[in-house]
Length: 332
Image (cartoon, rainbow, N blue to C red):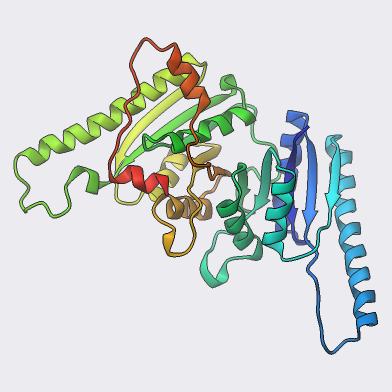
């Protein structure tokens, strides 16, 4: 049986997502694993024997900490809970641990800041997202669902760009909820660069208006076809097309306006200067969301079996794959 993994760092901040993870594990009938990485300590000013004693005490404290949390979780949710205390660098060790025994879902707290002020677990979450392909449920301590389970009936905002990679997150939603429990709110953000060609003479020629209509209509047809396919599979679906320069702002404002309980999106997981568009969009959404964010870094060639299987029997509107600059934005 696969499990849910909750990385912890010994702080109340890190524990913020624990009860949400436990509630999901209980509903899914899945065991929960709590992991705290014990860093190897080296101090040239302390003898090896004394350092060994300090290390032993520190490891014992960490185990006691995790076992105490496990006892609380088991007492409240009556689920199987295991604890693991590997040793090494936090992010690298968790990546190796998750690769050796892949979890069904990683649930963890992340911080709403970036740069030098990014909290330890924020930087670890960023590293894990770039290197692992399992889904993550990321929450901030201020989010409304941190101390309780996601409601049995949820509204989930899903940003799409017409690519199979972006669509693959729908199946991660399906692993958490049955279609009858969910209203999917699909959002397609059309960047002005898609509508108005960069370098076009000013003022735009008369064909510019037709180009605008074509691009927006194409995006609308794509969402209508996708919504129809999902409805055939039993999902409740809404959709909207928005023109904007900043997809992350649209996603966040739409989630708030439509009172969504969860944002679900895919990212390419690139780092450094290679982090482009959806990578940065996902990062901004995670840092700015007031709801939990379900995010997955899909493997190359990933797609949504839910949409693919439904398309095999579809006889109504077909989904149109919309290419263009924003497809690249949402694929990286």
